[in-house]
Image (cartoon, rainbow, N blue to C red; front, side, top):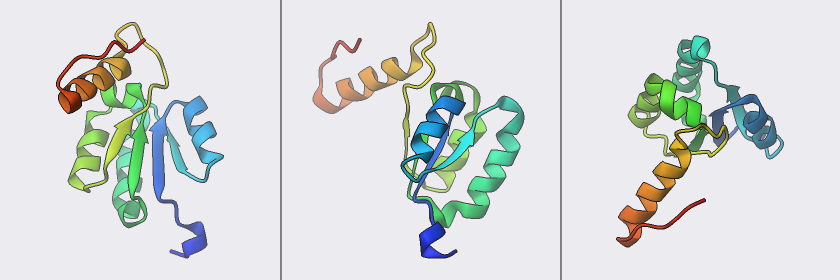
Length: 109
């Protein structure tokens, strides 16, 4: 792939989040549960170009195969707090990671 067309960051999330991150030069995939196989194929075909990934809460909650693929391809990922749900998955994960990193719970609102 031509260096000028290479995308180092891949974003898999809601349409709003993908559009925002594409403005910064990221490669984006709008997550829909019907597109999981298509996204996994794209990740497998282009894994050498992706250095990191941002995934939306809905991907983390419903796209387990996408998360598994990112892990298998050794593409580091972070969850975006993009679509707030009643479960607040992203905030809970951020709280868990911060507790693990510093040994105490932080209140994240």
